[in-house]
Image (cartoon, rainbow, N blue to C red; front, side):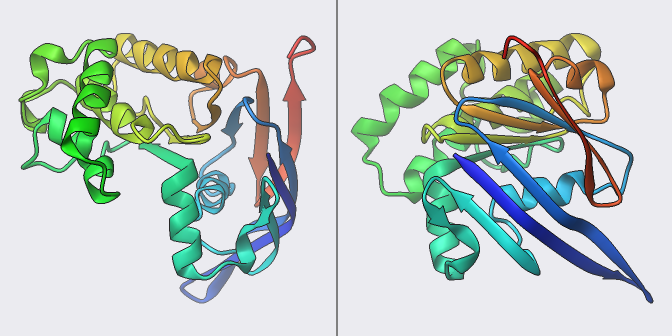
Amino acid sequence: MIRLQQLCKRYQLGDEPVQALDHVDLRINAGEYLSVMGPSGSGKSTLLNMLGLLDQPDSGEYWLDELEMTALSEEGRAAERNRRIGFVFQAYHLIDRLSARENIELPLVLNGTTPSERRPRVNELLQRLGLERHAEHLPHQLSGGQRQRVAIARAVIRKPQLLLADEPTGNLDSHSGNDVIELLEELNAEGITLVMVTHDAAMGRRARRRLWMQDGQLLKDEQDAHA
């Protein structure tokens, strides 16, 4: 599904150049469940941004299925991102003035899905995620765990192939965090490829494949024998 070849990215931090990604080679098969771990500044989030087509590398190739993403125009990358990729962030990024239902529905509104098509898909996710009673609540009326479930529902409403989660439990207590991880794992079991960046070693170890990064390089790629 995914193939990275010699991917490099450098940023300028004041007077100092930072090699955020340093000739990264990586293959990810469809349906895999990966965690990406490492110290702050190791390149984890940069890697996730590259996978999500939110940033362009300075050099190297990114193949998603049979399409080379770095060769696409900005409009082309946006189209592929909207069609194939879902995002879950630590800070939720919900729209404050929209209800839980409206936040979940927004990607379908933006891509022109009709109201008659949107309604059953949104209702199904609200029920599955235990949010029916909170459908009309605004984000500030929801707990952290509920807001993250809304964010996950919004990320998967278009049925993406790839789900990228950046510290999805970082703002949650342990109980809510465990609920969120279990939900992401259920989605992975249904076929969505899941890549999760985390500082939480216990959460990271739940993944069937674990990558460790440092100074923009992949130091270790560990996979369960039965995976």
